[in-house]
Length: 179
Image: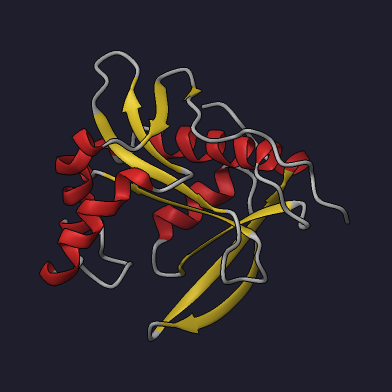
């Protein structure tokens, strides 16, 4: 399959019913630091980022392409992040990743944001593969349910970081947007 033509896709802003997704900014460092260090957020990601790596994360996150700060539209409060790796380690496929602050879990924000970013990636991030993938620990039931809710289907299981992992995939026609 041929690649979609590369579009001027970054930086960009995505608006949903309740959210604004915008490029991560240096001013978001406090919220991103919480995302990297909160034990509950990082429960299925190997735990909090180590102190010696944290300064490097803080210094470089705002310049990363395809890294969105997820904010509420009304208050512009940063509640999480969603990113796309255009050339992941999984056969160079587009991969979506996300982190949300615990006080915003269970409200559908992650589903809304991840679906919007996957839609954007399918449209604008060039790839030879027609899908976007996501990988999560099988034990992270909430994440598995979120991916299934937006139309992703389980395509592979493997062990990595001493834990069973699940890979999900979706193509344009299978994506479910909206709340």
